[in-house]
Image 1: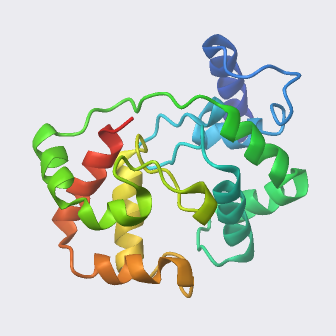
Image 2 (image 1 turned 135 degrees about the horizontal axis):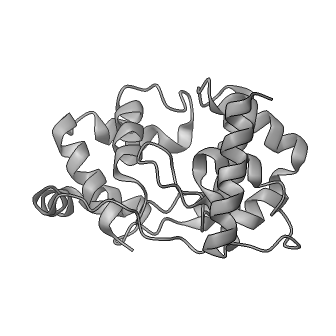
Amino acid sequence: MTWAVVAAVVVALALGATAGVGRAEEPGYAKAVTCSACHGFGGNSRVEAVPILAGMAPAYFKKAIEDYAAGRRVSAEMEPFAKQVTLLGVDELAAFFAAQRRAPVASRPDRDAAERGRAAAGPCASCHGAQGQGDQAKVIPRIAGQQAAYLRNQLLLFKADKRSPGDEAVTKMKAALKEIPDAALADLAAYYSGLR
């Protein structure tokens, strides 16, 4: 373990203690420390390119971890951590993050971009719901209140078929995204990021 990782864990623990997130006796609390270095303690990321895990549906968390660990969702950063999560107990960590309260994102999206995104969000609502809450039964994630930069990056990856290639569940979404200009993807991300 490098000193940078140790320092990040210590800082995350200190921030978590002051924020009152979780309790040491809560199942998954100690195991979530590894994730907190990037995702924020309790899964409330303050880094725009890193997704918020707090409040994430357990089935979606588990699918994402399994896809990263198997290399189906390519990420040099996440693959080793996903493999570690499978060893630590993906179900326990999924339950821990699902139980955490999602804090509002730190940055506020541009109002004009969010309004343009709202006007263009019709196709997204058919799967993610009118308010971006997702569908747990269909393992469709909540995108409301997620980091705008993260959402935009994921949309671009889907559009280029670099995200979850071969995943039949997202084939319809990828086809729809091909018709949307890249600038409009930033607007959609701004809109959904601003929803609660």
